[in-house]
Image 1 (cartoon, helix red, strand yellow):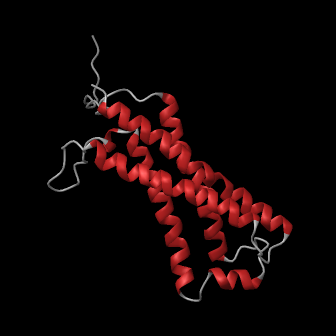
Image 2 (cartoon, helix red, strand yellow):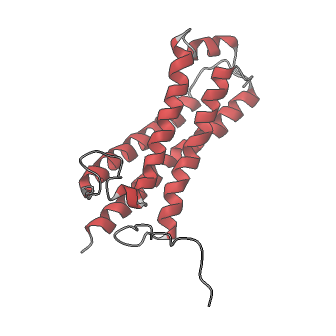
Length: 177
């Protein structure tokens, strides 16, 4: 008879109801749809030649603040995209241990679903406005630079609808009796 020298690992807490693979993939896709535009903005701050005229760089990087705000916008964007994973993970249903006074308590369904639904609406509107303004913009940018920017920003159009689908699934899964 053999015994393991390793201590038993505690079971990881799961969600109240199983999360289907499609929902987990849709939540993960939100991270991937927001990442290219965040990287594009970081490249602008670092001065990577993206086909933009110097005047466009100057307009985006208001001297001083632009070098701080543009990266912070990218970090905030990715942090909000990361929160989508909470809709398919246990930490989106129960407050984590590190949150004082709330640790271990259930997160009210509407406390997660309402901000996520509003975020989905905001991301969808942003995606539509982005497409509209890009098609009608008068930017000083080379054709290849326009392609690079478009390839980096068009995936964001999917963020809102993906978040809406995951939010709807979260609400239904958590309110199902």
